[in-house]
Length: 125
Image (cartoon, rainbow, N blue to C red; front, side, top):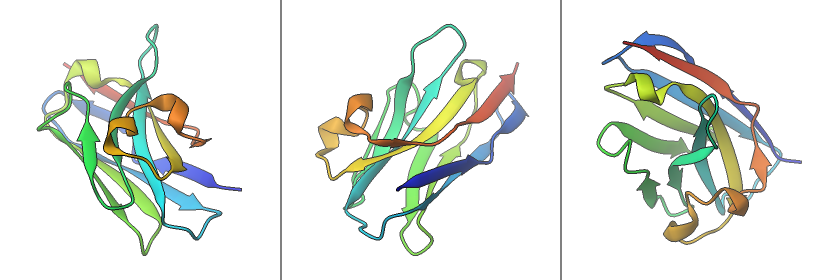
């Protein structure tokens, strides 16, 4: 059973930075895609960034140029570096893992099979 545990959330002022981590366990096959999603109060969950097993990435337009997704296969850990944070980035952030996928699926929620419990990010203006 795949388990995903997020960490690194917190409160920060607008313009600040945070780095989220997602520790994955329960599988040895690195042929997975992984992604970050977020859900703000009263809004639907949305894709933020995804990375496939070859390292190809995809970002939501709202975070391009500010967020960077990366992974350390040796540590089975996914990261999301978030810079120039805005109040509209406030949300619960979720890590997800799914089968190998083309880049066009990296932000598609229904593609992902495993989800973490989430970590809260709050950005104050």
